[in-house]
Amino acid sequence: MTQNLTELESVPPRGRQRPRVTSLAIGGTLVAVLVLAALLAPLLAPFDPNAQLMTARLLPPSSAHWLGTDGFGRDLLSRVIYGARPTLLLVALILVLTIPVGMLIGICAGYLGGWTERVLMRITDIFLSLPNLVIALALVAMLGPGLMNGALALALTSWPPFARQARAETLALRRSDYLAAARMQGINGLRLMFGHILPLCMPGAVVRAALSLGGIILSAAGLGFLGMGVQPPTAEWGSMVAEGSKVIFDQWWVAAAPGGAILFASLAFNLTGDGLRDRLDTRHAN
Amino acid sequence: MADAAVTRRSARVFWLRGGRLLTGIASLAVTLLGLLAFTFMLSHLSPVDPVLQIAGDHASESTYAQVRRDLGLDQPVLIQFWHYLTHLVHGDLGISRLTSQPVAGDLLRTFPATLELATCAMILGATLGIMLALLAAWKPGSLLDNLARLVSLLGYSVPVFWLGLLGLLLFYAVLHWSAGPGQLDDVWIYTLEPKTGLVLIDSWLSGDTEMFRNAIAHLWLPVVVLALLAMAGITRLLRAALLEESSKEYVTLARAKGASRGHILLLHVFPNVRGTLITVLALSYATLLEGSVLTETVFAWPGVGRYMTNALFASDTPAILGSTLLIGGCFITLNALADALTYLTDPRTR
Image 1 (cartoon, rainbow over the protein chains, first blue to last red):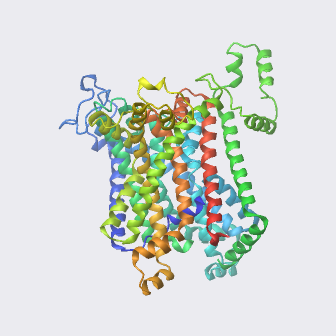
Image 2: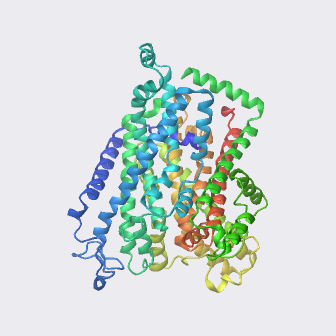
């Protein structure tokens, strides 16, 4: 039944259409801010994110340190800005890993049909019904923490929505005149699947990607929070919240700042996903 | 498209005759087997050599080989997987390195706490989520609808461990409304007689009202934090389903015949989305069980989630895999249960 929910997510809400366009605008702006922060981190950050200064430990937010300092006297604003890097890198890695796999499986299932389809979709459903964070935690615990392993672990349970979407769109396309024309020209098999079906499935995949990214960011932050993500001293939002949780009652800003950044990033992608979905309207796929 | 629809319909008729619930059980079994294969594979990826763990670092080659043989590690992989399964069936999940106890016993002891937290959160979150979704779908585009969307968007995007920390800061450290982390204050934690493992029921049975109130004071904050999470997901998906259903022609007809919006929503549209509702509820419940890993760590709640986190820090492989199996198994079973319930309550899926 989970599969029906992923499809339901793609149903654009009725009601007024205007506010939805702005959700794309707001989300897009927030994503742009995030990407810029990650790219221009050395220019934007007022301090070195890893420079420890024991005389400036746990300072409250001030004009010198806008978000205060952490337990090692590192400037939190700089660390929050630099923290956008591992997050976006992880997101990019996961997309590179999941979209091709998901679309390959989805298009093969939809185009070939029969037993191939049944087996492939069965496998997809198995992966879809695995708990994302717990599976990732177990995998990272065995492979060892780190950016690449974290991305692999999260990708393992993130590709099924792409496969389902690609299959649904391929099924809808299979009988189209456009593909019949291509077939009459002698285009078949792989070339038909990847030269003609794939491009038409791309918009759907983009929407699905934007919709899942918010959740992926939260899972990634959860990994970091449990010490299974990017390792210190690299600034990573999840692990920064974990560090701040030790002093939450007295120096709340140490945990509040990076957590706010996680909320910001997740919100940015969720808004973009909602907005894109309404723009591109992937409903015909179902 | 038409072709696919026909295949699907004939397949549906076929499954109906063959007993669809049976196939449901079969597919559940396949999925659980997939999970088992995954944990089995992980136990082989583990950086800790199980032979060295028993034989010690300075074991001679013959001792090493003997221990390896005793553990069955010299057998083919499939045989090893079979052994793994038979051990599991006998409730043998290995010995936790952290607690030096059988993992199965540890999980049985910690699971009630997780169940209690997730169930209370589910009840609260589902009530709020359904109400909010109905209010939103009552007048789409209204202020209330936008508010519901904003709340669910925020709840959907917020990292739960961070929300928990801020909650502790505000309600425990500043306002003193919550009794803070843990299940009970230290005064009671050792006097409580664990009968069911559910602290609310146990403290109620003990007859000590003071203890019962203390249990509630500890419980409410993590419950509210998790409930917000559940509410966001439920509102988001249920609202979409309600709006989708509201665009059908029978709704227009009912409107034309003079039925009020509220009447149609509650008596016609809402019952028709019950399939989605059941699925959404099951999924949220499963997500809450999974989310317990993060929440329990923040609230020092002695459940499976915290057990798993502690095991992660100690690289305690049997305990990590045992918790993964338990949480994953619950997750998969809930999904399958949702399918079965939808099938039983909604004639349209037959």
